[in-house]
Length: 498
Image 1 (spheres, one colour):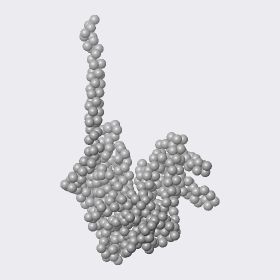
Image 2 (cartoon, helix red, strand yellow):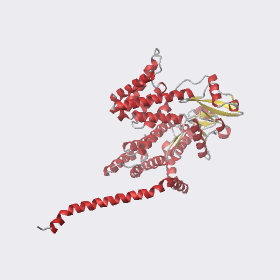
Image 3 (cartoon, helix red, strand yellow):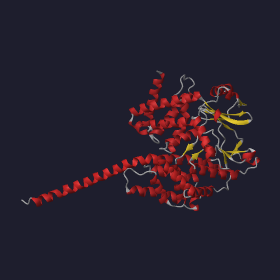
């Protein structure tokens, strides 16, 4: 009964907030009201019941702020919210940590673990990471908090039911897309809490970057991994932002930041893998003797993968804007999707948008005082302003996330290496990525991707041809019928002059 009453209050809150949002869209109004309501209930010490969406109030508040900057980018808002907030709860006590780890790794595997740190070295959404040892090897163990995951699942179920109730009662709530946003939130949380998938992503990243001497991806120890535990080899490291520690280790902070910028653009926009270890806040450098100076990409945070056409658009359009070629950027825009009812004005508007952007980045004088993050923001705004398909929305979301990361890297570079020319590094990386598309390796990779689509495409060819032929025949019959109808009275008069 209490749950039903909470559902009713939450649904009524959604309806009221969606109707009376004075600033921003109805979705932002709902999220802001929900966050304020949750904080107000948390502040009431006398309340005996837990507030609605107790474990999601921080996520909701930060997502509302992100949606104000990017009103249509629900996925970006969710990821930005999780990146900006800390842990949702207090970590386990040392005894509870050992007990939870023993339940997750029963038998000899738990006995193999020694020197487990009493306090976690990092806390995430619903997990905590500890240092330990397996024999003589240092390891990093991430433990999923099952109680917090259950609470999150309950909150998400409650939010989705309330959103469905609100959309049934209010037309403006239906227009807000609240339930779709809750579904996006649920998918993002489940993906971030899937430690087995995170281990697989880490292994794939290690394989893809095995020949890159600039980065180090710790090995996943699969015998000590499952859906609630992730174990990797540990590497001694220092943050890239700690210039004193880097100099003490014999490393040059400016050179490392230049390498970080190169790796960020090559790995994210070239390989399509966005890792928090390449962000300013999460970038770390190994200080071990055999891997000194290499960027450490650990498995403590989830990764984001970009599709080939998404990163292809970002690379091609960014390079085109830097060369002042707005027509190429517009052409790439239409490659990602066209309007359902094409009109010549669409091409003019898209070209105008990218022409304005090209004027800001085409020359060194125009780029002076402009950040690289602004370039990615311009690409995101262009695809969002002329979003003819869902692909444009996804690209805008990726551009918004990349722009946020690049802005943080540029801020760090301005503070620690003020003489570093970030634009020069980015231009060289984009030129190299563009050249790779036309090398033999790049052409073979593109052909391989096309061949992989053939088993799905070729069986549809006869049906598509039949549909096209039927449509052409129908058009021909329609034209013949119209011509006969127009010529009928004339022929009748000639045949019957009376």
